[in-house]
Image (cartoon, rainbow, N blue to C red; front, side):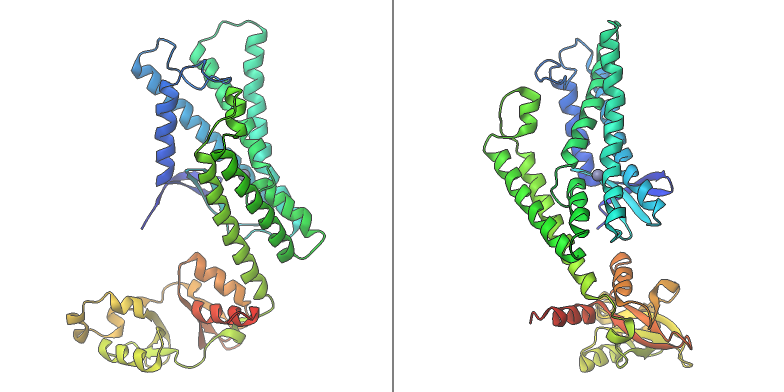
Length: 390
Ligand SMILES: [Zn+2]
């Protein structure tokens, strides 16, 4: 299922909107158009300014879009520094809880990681300081200004300051947590540092749940001067908890594959079928060999495509006797599905995760000939064995 749409590019990075982002956008616009401007310490609405609904909603939409644009600038801050270190940014996605810059790889050097992590909050601080000083300047000079515009400047300014502070909480995988991990990683192994940072992140997540449910949310306190409930905080905490767990697992996985090459994990038997093989024969072969994936070759052994049990299952049973492998295989057209046997197996896993593939064909580094296949399943079993968990 496609859950996000690309809306453009900035610095060459595809910018995507996740469907949950549209929910928060609508909530923001509705709230801002109807809240009173004096209810909170920061004016969080245009509802009591005597504006017509059309103007109220238009101004709210502009404020929302510009606020989310500054969120994008926060992510671009991270991305810019990461790109300077040679890391590719696959995309930036705005979703319910903010933005996410998807990097090809998070640099393992602590020096690089903390610089990338701090760049986002610094960007938010800079934007916040700029807008807040415009607001303070206007007030100090007693400039009579269009009140909705003043509110707009103050909201963008204060939200960005809050965004910067909130992101600096050392709750991994938030920015502050990444800075914390980088700090730890100068003293211990990357995996150990990740485990410790994740633990601290989980403790923070637990505190956020309690703060939200036990009427102790600091954000509500800042806005209203009173302690209150905040149902969004536990939801954000759950999201952070899951993200931290996920990243801990991935870090351990990749670390355990270090130094292990494709040739150590690849399979050299049950690797290929002919493109002319009838589909029914392939199904029999798959069952017999208990194998779910094959490379497809022609008579002279050249790579023609890839076929998996998942692809075969998509073909209606009554049509299977009419077709052969070449009719349903995914054709071999990209070099990305071929990897050298001397390459790191972690690299193979990265490609398979990125391109959502179950396996890659392996070529011999010297001769360039097809020599085997490497599958996600085999790698998973290998990692299980390495970690001694059976
Ligand atoms: Zn950030």
